[in-house]
Length: 270
Length: 228
Image 1 (cartoon, rainbow over the protein chains, first blue to last red):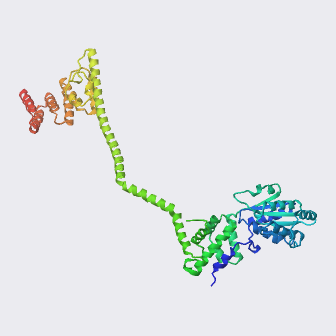
Image 2 (image 1 turned 135 degrees about the vertical axis):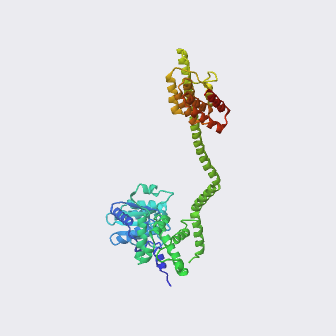
Image 3 (image 1 turned 90 degrees about the vertical axis):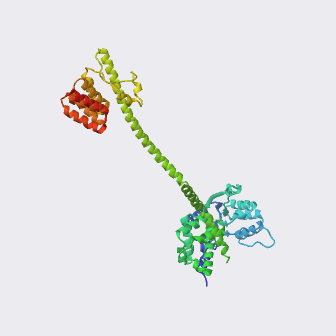
């Protein structure tokens, strides 16, 4: 027999699926800000924030929303090599596949883009841009200088390096949008809305305010961490539900299970 | 699905760790209470000590009171002696005989302010004086102090001055303060004789002799009867 917690668990599988997008006050603001920036005559837009703050899903959402209105392309995963990246880019710009056993002539590509100015307005969304090499990033900069291609670059903000300080961004980025972890109320709304979206009303109500606070304490409002923790919580609930139902109460999620999940994920330790 | 048991065990350990500060707090509190209980006799001792201290204070206060009483008395005595000295001076300067009590032991007034004071006061010499005011002062002083010596002095003085009514009165005052003082009884009896109450005097003396078998009283009785 399938446990009620199994569905709940699967709700929190981390994905950038647009169907999983939850509209929160903070995400609506970020979306509007990004959309507004894209309408400006900017060459590059930097979208940055710590991992799990919703950059990818925001890019995905904006792509899905605007794909029929604009010439917009979403590069969700970085190409493993420079060659592959330019092959991909060639296809986007020329709308043709690169012939086999050929390489993109970058100078020719620049000239091609220059010719596109005022004819086409292409937006390329580059997710996980911190994985691109400095050479690729430099070439991206040169392409953006043609003003035919606009890049929205999504980057992780890390503790060790301030990416904005990098020279190739410093002089050319005209707009910076920073995404932050959710506040407690937003995270609470996020969990509820996620569950309600799958009609898991009872389970959504079984997470009481006290446990919500604890979840926020462990995840610090990070959506990815929240997804992981919620997944683990429902996984443990599922286990008890199937094996030791006397240890589970359907009316509320016990603190014990939240703490056990936090232990499992390493938020706390003995 | 993973095995939940190790996670449960880990959670128990975590709970223990989380509650460690509480356990420590409770342990320290228990230790503190234990130490306090163990030291309870000391506490009692301490409390007693404090109480004793207060008792001592009270005692001190009492002793102070006593001392103060004594001092007061001494001061009174001092004032007496001062008065005496004053009287002496006054009378000496005016060439009139001095009849206010002075001490037997020389003129050392300061030496009176010691334990011998009472003894010294008993041996008062009475010297006649014509100063009525001096007697009035002693009478006033007696009203305040109820000093037996003052009363005895007045009884003797008035007797010597042939003021037998007053002598009788003051001898009676002495007798009220100390019924065993023969001297006052004798003045009282002799004053009564002088006032013509002979039989009454004899009766008083006989009664006293019956109780005390005093030789002095017998002699006085004999003298009174013979004079009769």
